[in-house]
Every structure is written in structure tokens, then in C-alpha cells.
Length: 335
Image (cartoon, rainbow, N blue to C red; front, top):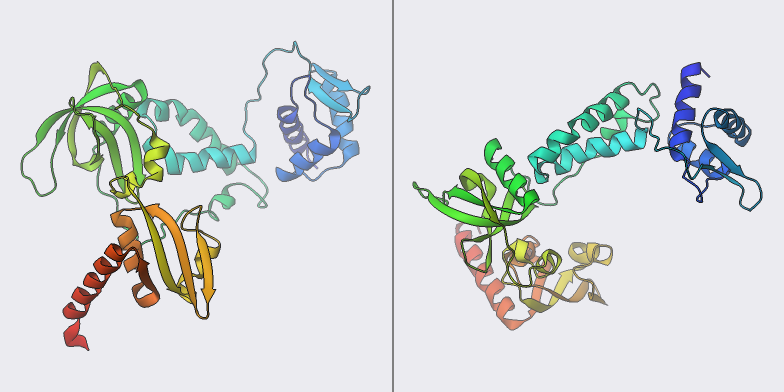
């Protein structure tokens, strides 16, 4: 055990100790330290705490069980110039996966933390934890991966900043397939990452309904002084539950589906909805659930091929039958 290892362990321990009246037991500290890669004993931790209490305002409650250590209630705010391994990994993952959803000013302000996190993992001396852990964690799409479209940096910066400040934005928007742009005043409400595409959920002008605009189709963005105002009853969670991000109209659908067992068995562990019911019939699974009525639902069903049959509602069954007939007609020459 080197002096550097001892100092690192003690730094981590100081960060784990709460302010009174909360307290941390020696056993709890040992468990937390082990999670950070420091395998030590209760006796060593107790010895460290006694030594540290001579230089820091730490108090030991020996009168009330469970006995534990705290920062004194009147101790000055204190932080250590370093990150734990788990904190560094969290910062690094945040940089990878949520930076494009944060306002540009926030991302800029967080760059010192991102750099500190990378440095902390780079200097981690033990292969048991640290930077190598990041190479063992990936987020992969459950569908065919697509390359993301290019978003103008200045557009994303202005839109995210306006969203953060709740300000209106003037944009030049090019519809798909159009050679010209349209200038709109919009009320930014949310940024939504859907697969490879980042959408701006917003009101356009004085219209009360909200639209989803692919951010890569915005050619110019200028923040305005006006306040961005949401439509009446705006509720992001409710919209998500009703499938608005899957381009649905917000209506619900009671479906009954017959799955081949191998195609639908995953629904036991990843339900289609909170009210899902599954009945087993031989090699088939009958699945009943209330879901959002969206194009995404149709795409999902088509992906199972002959592994699923829509039993109800009859309108959806007829729709899927018509799609199947067109597919057969298109591939008829391959029969």
C-alpha cells in the first residue's frame, strides 16, 4: 500500500461522510469504499477516521446506536478536488448520451467536469475499475441502426438555449423535398431524441397545437425576446404515454394479438403495456393490452412477419391483411 493509495482512500472516505445529524457507520464506509475499489478493514477505517478528525471537523457519535461519523453541523462547506471512479464514469456517460439534449451554455459550463472525469479515469492505476469499464457499456438501438442527419451546430445551440430560457425562436425551415425555406416563429417546448433523429417539439406562431420538427431541417435559428408559451394542458409525460413521439394522434387502442411462442416470449419480461395479459394456447401466446394507436405500432407488428396475427380490433386486422397482400404481390415472382 503506497502513500498515494492511502491518501486516495481517505479522500474518498471524506466525501462519503454526511453532515450531522446524519452519520455513516464504519461498516457502511467499508462497503462504499469496496465499491470504489478499496478493499480495506474496519480497523483501518476507524484508524483513518480518528486521524482525520484531528484535522477536519468530524464528530463520532458513540452515544446512540448505530454509532457513526459525521461532519460537524457548523462545518464549512467542503469538497475535495477530485472525483470518485463512479462519479467520473457517470459524468463520462452523461457526456456521451445527453450532451445533445442539453443547452449549449450548460454543456460549455460542464466541460471542466467532463475533462476532470476523463482525467480521473485516465490516471486510475487499477485495471479492476475505471476507464476500461466504459468500454464494457454500450447503448444499442433495438431496430436497424441509421446514421444521424447533420444538424447545424449554431442551430442546435440557439434552440437548446432558447428552450432552457423559455424564449421564442425565429427559424428558417426546409420541408423534406422542398427547395425553398419557410420562416416561422416558434415556441420551443421540448427536445426529443427518437432513434437517429432529434426533434424540436414546439408551437408554430399563434397556433395552439404542437408539432414535431426534425432539427436537421432547420437552416437558421435566432432567439427572440418573446416568452415561449406552452399550449393549454401541455404535459410531456401524458403525451409520451399517448404515443405522440411515435407520430400518433393520441388515441388508445385495445389490441388482441396471437404470437408464435418464440416471437412473443420476450413480452413476459418486457410487457407491451402495464395492463398486458398473456394467455398460453399450445405454441401460441394470446396477448391483450391497451396501447397507443401509432404508426410505430404498425411498424413493430410488421417486423414479426408471420410470427404475429392481429385478432382485434378488426380495423387493424384488415389493415395488416391488406399490407400482407401487397407484400405477397410484390414478391410473387420469387415464389
